[in-house]
Image (cartoon, rainbow over all chains, first blue to last red; front, side, top):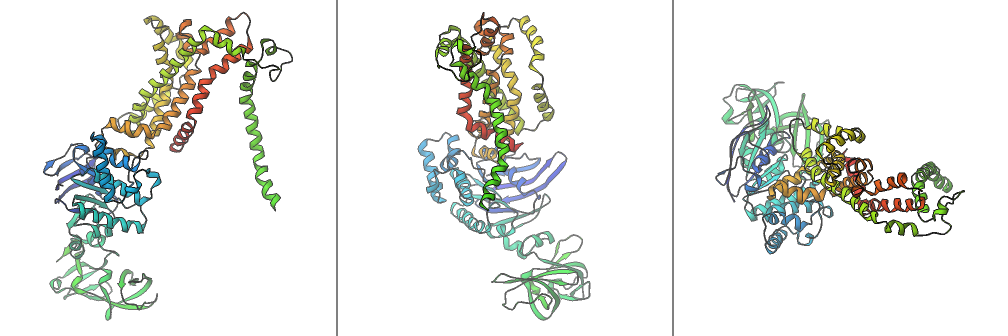
Length: 350
Length: 282
């Protein structure tokens, strides 16, 4: 196991920069997710850690050793790919033992390594099968098994669950987390799914357009987003944003309706964006009037998409009383969980 | 109702079946004629009117071919030239095709087009200059030189085929092997070669057929009788013999065709899947 340090890491393809200087410290044994929308540079960053992409600037250190320019095989890391990248002409056992074969390990050593990994991942009965004879989840486990066999210092995962159906994704998510808790190997995990990031990580790195927007523990990002991007990206459904002005200790919307401000922000007097998560809106007779557009009950909770003027607002209610489309409902925010953002910069005002 | 169901597809297929039969007769007719003639006596082979099947089948023509002392030597030469040319083409074509598929370098597209263009130059156009060149440097009648020339004819198609097949292998598989600790050579040996085996079978088969059936290259650059191939020997018989024995010649043709037919039979499965994979990749 080892820590991973990225210092002002940059990547450019020709004259086109894609990563503008990323600095992240990943502690020994930590599970870190790189999360962000498509094209934000998270997979490129992971591939730079792996050694599959050159580094245009900055430094990457693994276990205190600078690895810029060090080939992948000398970095002592293992990577699980989105499409599993199993060797189709080799059995599960051969796939898992390939790295040991390259190391010229003896037959007994190879068998022992493969057996150990197969037991961890419940693959023992599948060792003689070929990848084409496996389900998506089993293939994913073989890909992880191939990584475990090597007993590397760092695990890298590049969107490993994207090709699985929703149910299997949740199951594999749990398995990967359990695996990490058992092996305690430093793990860097790339995903565009913020739920995956929130549920699995010790630390989340939110990326956008080749820059780090915020680094922190999952709940830290949820409760204290640094800016509108993080606030909108973390949490599902996304945070509602309402434009208006802070004045006289209240937040006044464009149509004149007012929303309460936390005590710490009541001194503000400027144009701003009011942010409140759908789950932090409660029904209240003296609240903001909304017209219900769509009602989506899921059993445990009901998601309501409503309109306030031209603004769409999403609410989540846990009571059993379902509003009807066209009905007017009144909601008020849990003022302690409200965020206010600078209108031009998008940064959170605290 | 049932009549409509059964007659529909049959009616639709009938022209296709007829067309297939027509082309099969055109392609297989001469083959069947050669095969039938090879079992006829010399007299029957030239009888008028000709017989379709031998009245009394004989293996005498085949025995005569095998008794011919030059046959073994010509056969051996054919095998050496064809196998040597294909092995050489693969030795050059696999690394070149891999590089074309996986590496990005300046002028790659132009280089690939030049390689393709070389296969478009008719071999006959190069005969005279190549002959003068080899004659000048004293390399006529060299088996190695003939093998290299035959190989050069099939290298362009080999490079293009292999490049297509390598491109069809997901690059993540190679990256995964890099992470597993493999170097480039180990990746090609352990992953690429097994995965493109159908492609290799396809190009090898095409290469063997092309070089085995070559006449002009060997006839011009290795005119020595000891260096000739079955194809050259066959043509020599037509021109040299006082009287042509058609039944003997047909037995010779059947035997000379056997290695290629056998090879195709052996690698047929890979060959077809190879061509299909290449076609899908485009």
